Length: 145
Image (tube, rainbow, N blue to C red; front, side, top):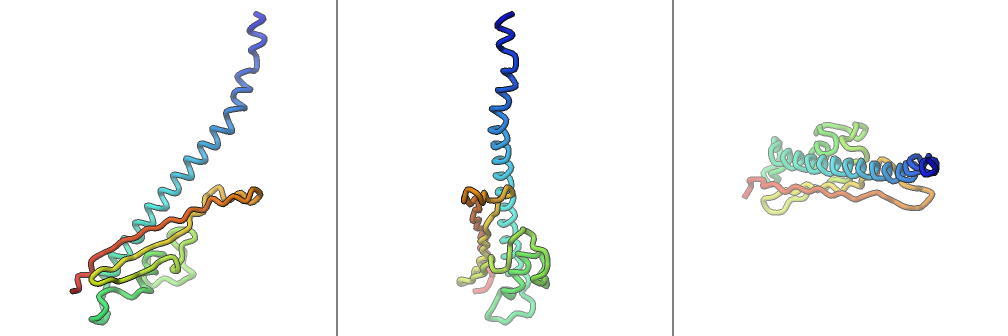
């Protein structure tokens, strides 16, 4: 009986000690999931931009077998070649300045360099910055000799 009285409340104290660690672990897993989703979306956007660059070439000069750079960037960022800068980006914080379109020989490369900002934000009081640079790139054959 005496041993049982000494044990009362121990489970509550153990719970109070472990709950902050469990919550930190849960937040970390959520952030990793968001990073992976954002990276996957960036890869898909670069693939869509490269495909658009080589498929939608109507009205381009013979020396340029890809679509215009502005329309490629708009497709990557906004999902629409005629979108304006006031349109909503497909990923928060993504701008046309984050997208690079380069041609080399018979290939076009669409590269996106985007800085991921965590949902939990940065810890302003501690000075720690948890933003993460993400880069996605796709190279596609234009079909031009």
